[in-house]
Image (cartoon, rainbow, N blue to C red; front, side):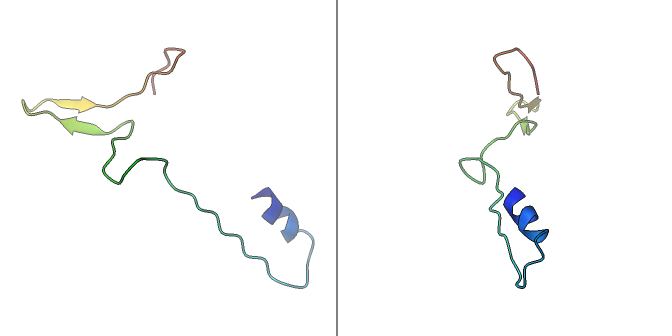
Length: 58
């Protein structure tokens, strides 16, 4: 992105188009993500969280 921004400041005599493939890094479209809420068979709801090595929850 920085290269495209820098090229924009050069006032070149032609157009420059940049394409960035920005996607989520998950295995599949139905993969669980942090913050998803699942409903168990007993009716309880579970929220998925990830714990890092520093014991920080997010």
